[in-house]
Length: 244
Image (cartoon, rainbow, N blue to C red):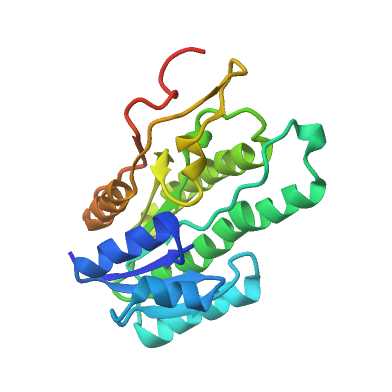
C-alpha cells in the first residue's frame, strides 16, 4: 500500500527515521515539528510536505490538518509521535512547570492531533484511515523518577483504546506502538548508564531505530479491516521483562 501519512515529531529520532522509511516505500509524507530546519533535514529532496507547528497549540494543529486536506484531499495514516522528556526526580522535586510543559506535548498534543485526524478521516471519501500512537515501555512500567512521562504514556493508552472503539463505525483503526531503548538522541543515556529499580546505575542494551520505523510501516500497510491494537518493540535484553 502507498498512501498519505502525517508524522508528528518528524524533525528527529523516531519521527525522522519513520518518515524516511515511508518516503523510501513511496508514500506521500507530511512532516510536523516545531523547527522548519529540522523538518527540511528530514525531508531532504524528497518533496515531503513540511508543516512546522506546535502540536500543543489547537490553532496550529487545525492549520496543519487544513493544509493536508487542501493539498492532498485525504489522510490515510497519522503517526502521532511527538513527545518530550523532563529530568527524572521524585515527584515532589519535579517543578510543576515541567509537568505542564510535558503534558502539553505528550497528552494535549496527542489528543489534538488525533482529534483533527479522526475528523478528517471521518469526512473524507472513501471514509476511514489509521491512527498510530507512539506509546512507550513506560505505558506498562515506570522508570525511577518518571512520574510525568509515565503518566502521559498511560494516558496515550487510554486514548488508543477509546479511538479504537469509537473509530469502528467510521472505518478508522487505531493502534499503539510501545518502544523500548531505540537508539536516538533522546535515548543516548542508555549507553552510558541509567538508574534501575534497585537503585543501581547500569548500561542498557539498545536497538537500531530503523526497526521501529519498519514496525510502524508494517502497521500502516495493514488493511483497515485489520488492526494491531498494541505492538511492543524493544532491545531484547533491556530490563523490562522480569523481576527487580
